[in-house]
Image (cartoon, rainbow, N blue to C red; front, side, top):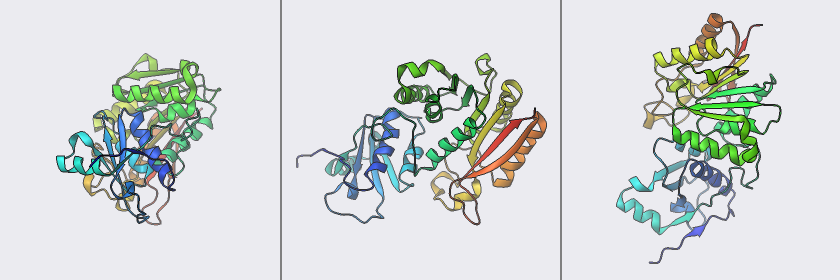
Length: 316
């Protein structure tokens, strides 16, 4: 049977979510993203049906699949075509729809990255606002990943200097592409991307008004975490630092059995609300910062929010 490759045109209400999920995968280096299974058929499907995405050419180690999954509220299975069984590859080829390569914002415009229904997007927007609240001229993003926060802030003309640090060269490459899409070549002049570790002191880290670390600390072993604290609060010593991390209590609301009860298999730990508050207050006391913790996301009456944010303001 001849295989017909169709393009996802967006006639269904959920098509925009699929395109946003695909945009994340494309930005990370994927060659093609396919919607397959029941959602790719011509007949109507149950609105509660899960989504199936097949991705080709996605580099290993990008860590973006969970972020793409968030765009579809976690109701998605994302399969790497290269590692699929022959039977699954055959099944994908029989019923698949090519998801077009578009900018995250759908229209392809150079703008901030609105992630309206995504926890990841809400996290970026909230952190960006917490940064803007203090009117900084310079920000450093430790563990910048694919540059979501930097691209959001790069459009602000008041900000003169942005630095992103990540050990993964693929993340740095993705960040460079995303920032370029947001602000164009001229806007990237104020952005410096560093491939390396933020657990070691580097002169390029100095002179920043704000430090951000979004969903980073939980990936660090205890010695690395201590080193990060030393770099951020002793060496850089910003006027404000913003640190986000998952709330471990909320994991019972999500399906985390595949990752040993954690949000991501690479997480070395995840803190409860009390544990994160205690860690944050300890840092504030030791390094001269006032601290407050804010919730992020839909708050469960028992388990609290999915994400928690600590804001550190240096004592005058």
